[in-house]
Amino acid sequence: MSEYCSALSASLSDTLPGIAWLRHPAVTVLGLMNPENVRREICLLNVKIVMCIMVLLRWILRTQRLMRKNAPFSAKESRTGLPILTMDNSGTVSEDLRVCHVNCQSLLAHFDEFRYFFSDAGYHVICMSETWLKPSVPDAMANLPGYMLLRCDRRERAGGGVGIYISDALSVSVLKYSDSSSSSGESGPEFIIVDVWLDGFSRLLLASVYRPPNIGHLQDFFNLFMELQINYRHSIIMGDFNADMNVISYDSQQVNTFVYPSSLFLVPYQATHNLRSSSSFIDLCI
Image (cartoon, rainbow, N blue to C red; front, side, top):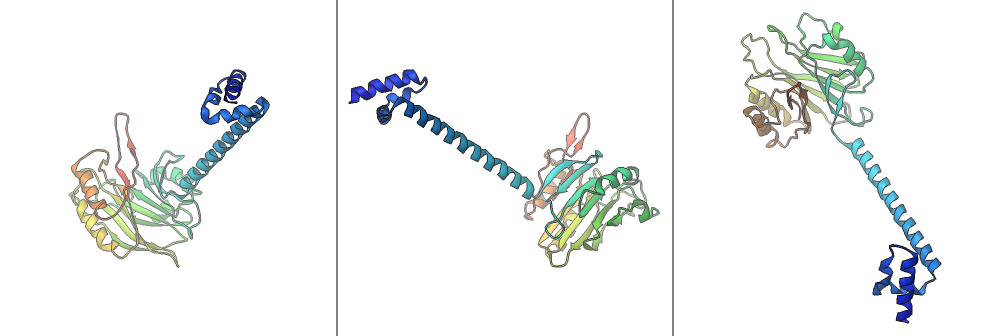
């Protein structure tokens, strides 16, 4: 009987190239089957393998879609070329909050692009750094339908300034803002800190920040924010810190020293500021 099985296995191996495993003692029982039945069984096995692979691929694709949908953070490039950092979940304001940061480098100079992009982008909060607005500029010149504008302008010197557009669907209260009236340039980071809420949902502590290059007193801002944060379950800091988090430096270590002991999270974007010869990670979302 074993000789018959071995002979039949050898015959099947010749008939079905690549099926040398039929000679293995553990599977010589297949030699008792009709060659046509063996071919059919092998075809069925191949079909089952293909079906399993298809099911696995569908599961992987579905999992990836769910991860993208539920991911709390994402990075995107705007249609206008403005640098955008986002905390982006699809849905209504009652389900989640869509927040982004834009380094404007003159809001009014780019306002047509700005309004075009955000008119249908669906963000509830738009944080801005380097607005370059002055107290003499009325809010009407930077009116974005459906939003209220909160500003902290640099008064004496050119440039700088921070602001936040808040959706009309939300309630907001300004808690703290920087004093940028100093002409010495040593006033520290420029910021505006607000309390954002929607009836029936947790309140959010939100800060929009601009730290000019080589300006100190960053820890003063962090200390102020932490004093306020103890009253909130949720908090976000967005802005241009001019501290490249891709390199080890005093500025980057100062940010890390604030973030990690505070159980906060720095969204790990790569480069947010790109030049021809260099790139840096200076626009942060914490």
